[in-house]
Image 1 (tube, helix red, strand yellow):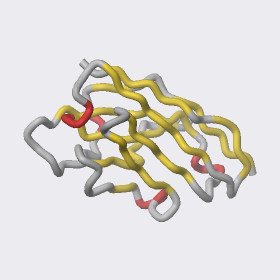
Image 2 (cartoon, rainbow, N blue to C red; image 1 turned 120 degrees about the vertical axis):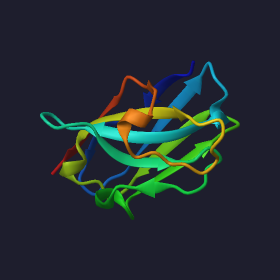
Image 3 (cartoon, helix red, strand yellow; image 1 turned 60 degrees about the vertical axis):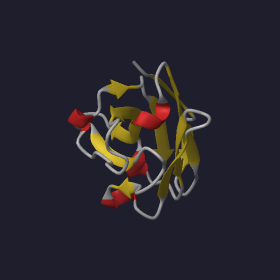
Length: 128
């Protein structure tokens, strides 16, 4: 069982940057594809980005492509989300998630139901 703890959220002005981190413990980190999701008030949780087990094939939702970058360090059991050129519409609680894929090196799930483990979330607020 893997436990996930996010950090790095906060308040930032539009155009600014934040780097989210998600530290994993209790499992073999490299067995998991990792994803970031977000949930704004009154909206459903939506996919933001995902990366396969060994850092290959990152994918992004269209609205963040070119502004956000997902990466992972399997030696540090940590996944990151670098967020640049932030806009107010990026305001949400950001969640880290892990999908156990011991037999698939390349899959990057986009459906939240494919992730079995979630962090508690970190608030990101972008002011205009």
